[in-house]
Image (cartoon, rainbow, N blue to C red; front, side, top):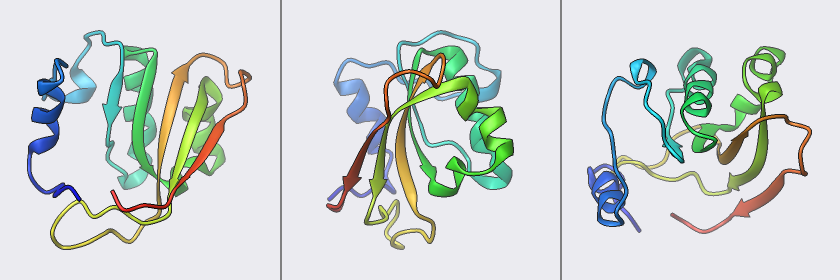
Length: 130
């Protein structure tokens, strides 16, 4: 089981030959093949961050609160403008620090730039601890 409180994630990605950029995300205008994100959840900010990710890369994988999937505002801001190709429902809320897991249900989503009218969304249930 990984201790998510350390900065081990970016070094793991770099050791696989991937470039990791730490920056002010919304002001970064580079290009990428894939964005892996843990966007801020407060005040529906995940939509802005995920849309920026889709402007940066054709494919985005992100962990979001389950509530990010609901509401007309979120639909119009994000979900109507992309394809939700995969979604993994995290049955056990991951613990990102030694303090334990959070209080919100989360899902891991894979978004693809383009119409939401593509192939059906593949849904998985992740039951194991991370």
